[in-house]
Image (cartoon, rainbow, N blue to C red; front, side, top):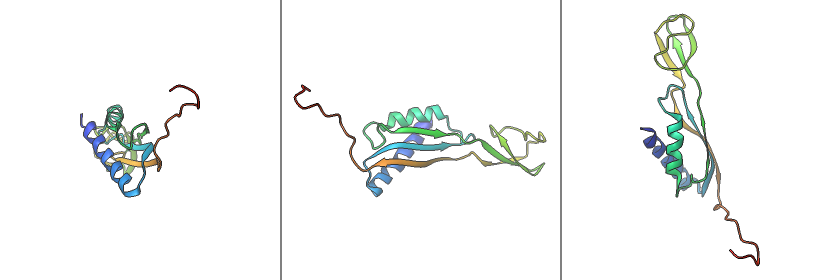
Length: 128
């Protein structure tokens, strides 16, 4: 399960950004894991949630976009959509294709807060 090490790397990127940009917590993390990236999206989400406790990512909404794979077919000279690296060209059936998109794993954006998370306060006169 290499997704755990990927999640650790993503967390390091976020922690470095928090130190550099002086934010306290992340409200939303958007990651892009292309169809040809070799990443199991469900395992990555699980790993990110497991790594988040006690970090600026704790409690953040985690969104993972999955852009389709794209490739250049040498035989027909066309850019085509593919689901896996082993797929033939959907137009000509040829296997001489070069992936051109959907291979990335990247942090797209963060919505962050400069303040500490607010804790519900007990009403005055109410036992806590």
